[in-house]
Length: 274
Length: 168
Image (cartoon, rainbow over all chains, first blue to last red; front, side):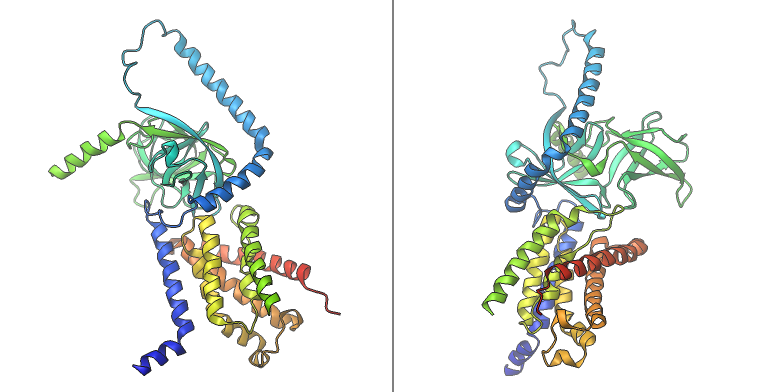
């Protein structure tokens, strides 16, 4: 017994080190699994509050650019509205139905893009009816998916994250693929699993595929920078230039899918029946 | 003694805030960030309690981690260098360390460089291994360690020059 106690006393620094090191490695591994970001994320009230304070201070520096962005978006929405104007006399058939997708807005209070697993922090949380798995976009296109929410804040898994897998397709031919990131540049992401049958050209537009419950179809992502056959020759490996400047995000929109629960329940039932 | 404790507490808080608000946003050529908050571990009294240093390093790393949303990456790297610090000191300063006669700002430049550089690169290496966590990106790992390490080291030297008390 005494031996054991002596052993502990003699090696107390090593044991302390080993214990704390294992704890930190476990914390690290935990964040590598999507949906397990719950423990110790910057969506807690202390760091969220501090980030909000910092954001309030630095907000003013980018106001000029943000005004320009909002102006551009207004213009675009106005033009789209103009196109619908002619259809107005006929009342829409499903005007009483709940729309399939609803939009909410939020402000980015912390943004990183230089790591391999990048996250954003938003200034809204559960209180503002944000939920895990809601899609995040800006006026220029795709940004990411909410990975964690607290009462007042939320963290977003950016598309600049090696864990990110998003369904995307070519705008002109509807060939589907998966959007990933190879960590090399914050303005270029990769589209894989595009079949070789697809007819690709530099500058073609890539949009979201709509095969998930997170994003509606047709949200802009980027244009083809270059492409080459992937290792096994059946698929293309495509580099995509993002429309969004991921390094200067300020205001974002969140997409709420009102049918998500219904679709997921149905799919679960079909899986269970197998 | 009392004075030194207070200095260390202030240093802890100041370095975390400096790191989180200023240095994490530098992103030189895309991915190079300096991590000078480990200066706390480097400057911790050389004859201080080793167990206490390990515990404080864990808290230091964890506070930066929470802000960065990086799990326990920084905490692991900090605990690691805090634990091996006695060996690095012995290796860098030789026998004089054993007699507790080393003062960091009075040490020979070469010995001081060995100490600072070993600690910085070990920290960055462990940190990037855990952050990248994949064997497919080994070149990225080495590149990040090298460039961020050099950047950190430059800033650490700058800070030391700025904050060394003139004892003439």
